[in-house]
Length: 233
Length: 231
Image (cartoon, rainbow over all chains, first blue to last red; front, side, top):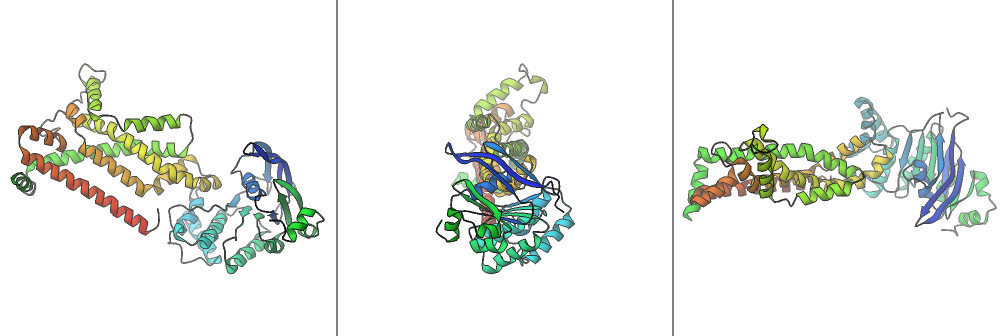
């Protein structure tokens, strides 16, 4: 269970792009429960924000502190830039567990159950690099789950997926949000409405609002209104 | 045509002297190749996987070493390992051991330089996976080497080809002693100077057959690799 002293905090983040501040003194305190959706127009810094949060990019200044279940979380991160090892589907899924020394039988059981849940059984021996764009993204999502993370950071997990796969992922996220914190970037406002407990809206590197979904959808902020009306890209 | 037919006759008569030379060549070059791979591949894996200070200098060093004249390598080893040299006490001059060392010096830079470049490409591609799953450096190196294996085999076989065709260094340090340090290339040089062209040509043909076989293996492996889309 998530305890009260758990937190996801970004404090005073400065990030320079071409010697200009993209994030200037950016701070945020995210909910430690449920699904936080990060929304914003193109180039607003959504992906950059979660890459910094994941620790893949170092900000020039600032502090990131994440504590879930009173300890450093096990993070599953899905990037937009999908890369697979030169191995088959099964071995791509087993890799994150193998390098952490998981038991072979456990690895087999875990992967089989995930493949079964996500209707991906039968593709274990195909080279992951040979899959279609959609399947690659789907497989990449499955790969983020293999080590049973308690913080899932997703960058547009369903941008290339068909409706059925999108639904399956959304169903999984809604079911699992009791057991794990989910932070997700999406462009799809309808998806945000379906999934979000909390919404962070960012524009041009500035966090405009972080609020509960219902409050966000009724926001009086001019930019948010414009975005919700589909007039801010 | 007489030389050519005599050469083939020599090959298919399974002349013991000829095959002794061929096997010694393969033995020395294989030892050199295995040792170079044991030393070179981890160095290449490390160079490809890290951004240590001086990395570029090390790469430049190995790249420059690729152009090292074999005759100079032979001369250097001769000075170092001759009885009056600093390593003379090893007493390995004119033995197959020093021929292996000479070949290592010649092919190690090829193994390191070419495989570093190959692995660097894969490492950059995998960087996000490694960072995301917090993969330790040793596992990053192992993964990169493993996934670059098909391309690395090409590089390794290039090294073998280079070792087998080398003559300048091993003739100086090996001395071309019959039944002991005489290998294909040194025999070709000797027999040509003696006018025994059939023997020289038969060894040349064997060298070409080995070279074609190596290239065929490389092609087959690349085809299999592409077929499986593991590249």
